[in-house]
Length: 182
Image 1 (cartoon, rainbow, N blue to C red):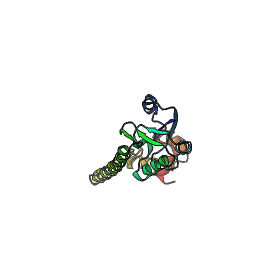
Image 2: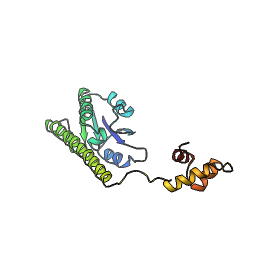
Image 3: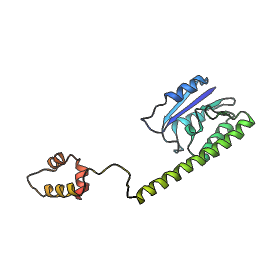
Image 4: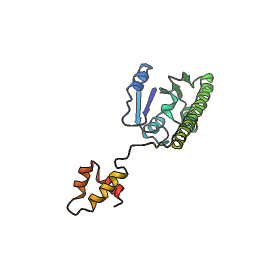
């Protein structure tokens, strides 16, 4: 049987393009997840692996759908192989039923790990560089120094409730309490 494994990292992302490509490749049974590829314990992947029989194929759009780390990718590939099944990655052009496919799998897996490590290093360097120039990432603060002083002054007014103060300032209660420290 030809199994398909589809995965995206967040619930906001869509599996349709993966499913379309895998359906066109002749996959008969689909296992779908919306979970990080770094998470090793994935319900649908475990279910798929438990159902493999000799001669089956596990198809993915590309290796990153199966795992984001080389170590985990190789572990999953070994589990597939131990069941007598083969791994096929459509976009990577790898089919582990052949010796060339197995060799290519290990090369692509190593390259994938290399590029992910480089991406992380470049991101860290970019963030560090931005911080050195005084830029801070994240969402802008709702209350700056001046508005915090106003919030504290309004808090001391016994005629105003916290809800009224928050409405006037356009912030949530959590933001108000965090900015005024209580």
